[in-house]
Length: 315
Length: 207
Image 1: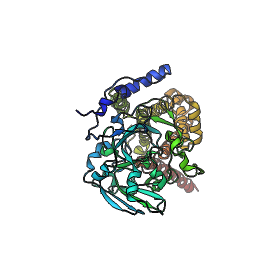
Image 2 (image 1 turned 45 degrees about the horizontal axis):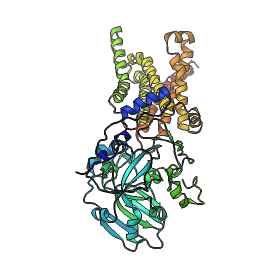
Image 3 (image 1 turned 45 degrees about the vertical axis):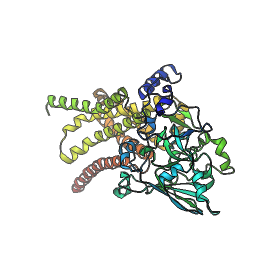
Image 4 (image 1 turned 30 degrees about the vertical axis):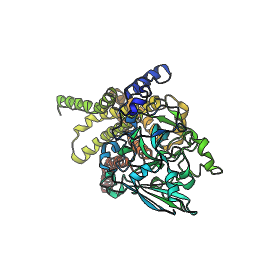
């Protein structure tokens, strides 16, 4: 018998929303810590995906409930509301799927996603996820370092950046259909980017699963990147192309609102979003706000990437 | 309209205006307020407040355009419900969102224009709610009372501005409210301008 994620995760780690609200009221009354009680965790619906837990990448906080991580999503290809991706996710067909790796590489190649899955051993890593909207989650991802794929492609000396492109197909992503004067829409396809050293960093995870299972469509199936020290929108989903370039790639949110979303978008409590503070965040499942940590708590590992840079200017 | 018709109409407004609150209470009871309940509740209360504010502001234009004046009898009730939802919206921000962290909230009010205008809109509505009783209308006198209650136009504009500034630029909803508000205020402006010009013509003919 194969273990389910819910079998191996202590149920005390999970908190239902009812209990959360009850905890909130209790907290309001006594000012103590939110009460945690038992509740069964619903199991992910997708196929199980075996992976070896990597103890080097864990966090002390309890993982967010799978139900929350798979129903509260920003994935504008499905719509602007948080519930749109889980409601409409079935329109995406994650197989067959191909990913083009090209640009400034010695060995450009179009991979079948099945090949990607076997390129390196799959590990489970528990990462913090901090959304630019000041909420956060703790998610057990499955994947391997993006560097494993990039090394295969062999970046050429001139390569300085990596551009990620999400699938553009209005049949599979209903919100990509043309809208009235482009209202309520980003410039498709969604593109994101990293500096090559950021992309090669061991924390940058090429991700194919979460919670012991393959990625749900609403979380970016069949493969995405996860960059835990940057705001969530940097972690592009449902990738069809990974291109190495010598110029800084244009990124979707930067094009939509350049003064609000910079190329770097590192989690930084000291640099406010123009419209709200980034100093605190609400962890999904908790009542009180938490203090946001520099580089989302990964400063020890990534701060050296930005030595000498003005992070206020390079937001 | 008969007294009985008015009572039925007011009962209907009570029921309709309480639906959004009932929806939230039901959502709390059945554990269905999304996984980020505080954000969800704040947004629902704010959106309901704007809708009710626009409904309040729509009654006079309806009279001006269609010559039906009975909806005006609902103005106080709708306005008070708008204030009720704005107050809940504000209270959730203070208690649930920031848990009485006055310093952070003070910083936000000072630094973030969308919060500044939101709080201002709420403060402008307070005297209107406080003087909504028939006794207060009498005590202030009709003219003064009417002038004071023109603050609702300012509150409406600030409320919509609050929504536009807080939302991501790609969202359509805030702009829908902006267009509705501009239409409602535009109809009033047009009617006022016509009245004024008619007065000028009368004055002019007197020579």
